[in-house]
Amino acid sequence: MFAGFFLELKRARIPVSLKEYLTLMEAMQKGVAGYSVDDFYYLARACLVKDERNIDKFDRVFAAAFQGLESVADALAIPEDWLTKLAETSLTDEEKRQIAAMGGLEKLLATLRQRLADQKGRHEGGSKWIGTAGTSPFGAHGYNPEGVRIGQEEGRNQRAVKVWDRREFRNLDGEIELGTRTIKLALRRLHRFAREGAAEMLDLDDTVRATARNAGWLDLRLVPERHNAVKVLLLLDIGGSMDSHVKACAELFSAARTEFKHLEAYYFHNCPYEQVWRDAVRRQVERTPTLEVMHTYDQDYRLILVGDATMAPYEITDAGGSVEHWNAEPGALWLQRLLLTYPKAVWLNPVPERYWPGAPSIAMIRELMEGRMFPLTLDGLDRAMRRLQR
Image 1 (cartoon, rainbow, N blue to C red):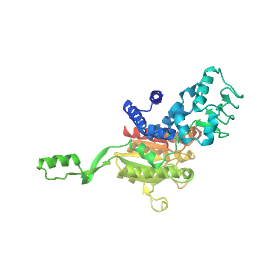
Image 2: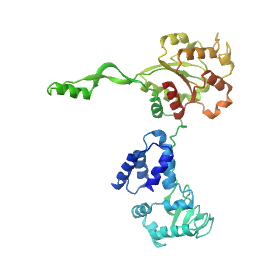
Image 3: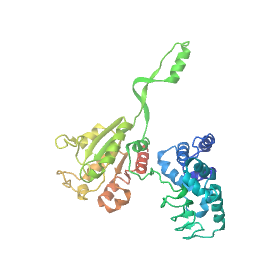
Image 4: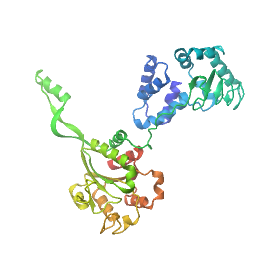
């Protein structure tokens, strides 16, 4: 059974190694998880999953291998020793008496195996065969005081001896809404580490070598702290339709400030024009010319624009198209200037990608970005960081 589980993880393209599988087996032999399904789930996940982005895939494989019985034949995979141990430690006296009505748990499981072998096809109703909506002690959506439930999402009468049921875990795949921690994981794709600043971190290896050369007298050697040397210019759309995406953008900004030592952030509305600003509250009186930004931060900076790109098309194509001020030049021209200054640039869009075709302005911005628009999901952010690494 466990070998099959390991192979299914490999088929799901979860990067699990034989060494990790053997670690899990060793932990099971030493009784780390005991006979608890929940404990085994967390133990297996800790041993076999190295990246949070694979947790959702792992949950699906785990459910299929151990809990989510989709067909009658799958019931043969139920570990009897687990059920037996659970019966000994978890069942109430009343539940044990109900099991005894059939001759004990072993008799119950033996009868289940026999009926699996005898039954041909699906059965619904009745009191003997494995099926649904009946009074047989085996199946789902029925009633029996001493039954084994198979393939039912939840209990109805709470009378099954033990539930081997589908378990749903939190979805952590590439399409979920981002949180600050998951954003940090994706942003780490964009890195170029260097040691900068004052020498204040202990270099253990060099200290050992220097101390040995110094006849055993301690000779401390320090180095500057290792930082991500990538430089990022972050331009964020704010206000209007972006109000519904404030949480995601705030989490992105918070994560970026942690991950990038060299981060410069400015705001714009809908489309970049001749001015941007750092403080949204004082944007009417404290603005920075976009040309000044382009002259201050050189091409070493990666440009990340964040916005829903949802606006009237003339805000992109026409002079005077801005809804806030009279812009002498169209937004498309300013976006092109930014892209010429910063060849390594991406646009992150918090609108789900499936809705992009319904907005002409999104298609226009995407074309100006030469296809470098990505959804603000974990998968989209990962692809964007890979693109900026080129």
